[in-house]
Length: 182
Image 1: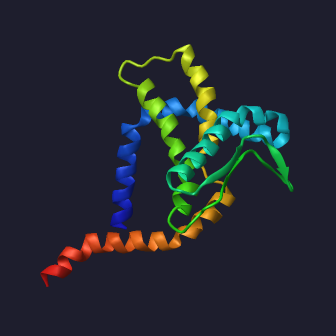
Image 2 (image 1 turned 60 degrees about the vertical axis):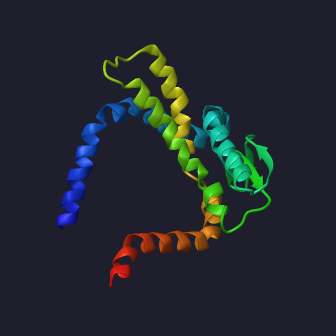
């Protein structure tokens, strides 16, 4: 119970400390939700999500290249895949246990783009400018694109041995010194 109280206080303090950034991102979030609703109605609205799709797939491409997953193809042209639409894809030809999760979950880094823009735009003395309206339209697709797809999560699970190794290393680091003393 006490842990929940402390967590609640920490969350409240964090929200108060970042209220200006969250307020700045609110229009982008509203636009993102509108874009998501429109793209479900008709495929022509995919044009609004193109910037986010491009960033999402580029992050997969760069992560795959850096981690040795050998990217073979890249596309951001929407195509029908059964009952759903596939907005883009990157084919990686050498996915292993150690590069699967970082390559597949790399789009999570995209959330830093809207956050970084909001931090820069809300420095002390910030006043709304017309450029902020344009930035809201550019940031909205990033808020839609940062979450990995179901296919990305399935690929990421190939790295479960790496998760085990990281957890073991963390436990050794966290509790190893106390075991050495006894």
